[in-house]
Image (cartoon, rainbow, N blue to C red; front, side, top):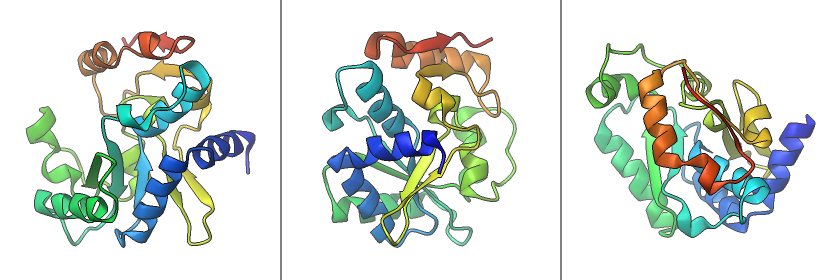
Length: 193
């Protein structure tokens, strides 16, 4: 286990709220299910660069799973409802990464995208390198990490555009909306473009 994975594991395990969320996701029965993106950033950057992690400020808990047999948005809604039935507090948002190609262009514009072949392939397209990270618990409560670009930006407090799927204009909109420098003093913002 690398030192970065150990650091992330310690932060996740230190949050009873996120640990419970991971247990709910693992026990949900959703195939190849992970928690990723903003909630991990909020935890790490809140603890390292802000005033601590406050679960009440979490906008959504992005749960990604991979099920090539269920490709409708209704299936995503059912998955979200399954998580909420197990624990109502988190603002769950479950998305089947096997289905993203069926709605991505309609939601975000541009050309259709090819179907993802795995959760890891999907995570590699997320908007910033620091949020292109997902975690899950294995059956023995060990934390597994999916970080196609590593953990340096997440743990090092670096907001940097990932050009894999998101263009510069959208990246700038995200930067303006999330205001990382104000929310987490000490975070380094590398302007997109």
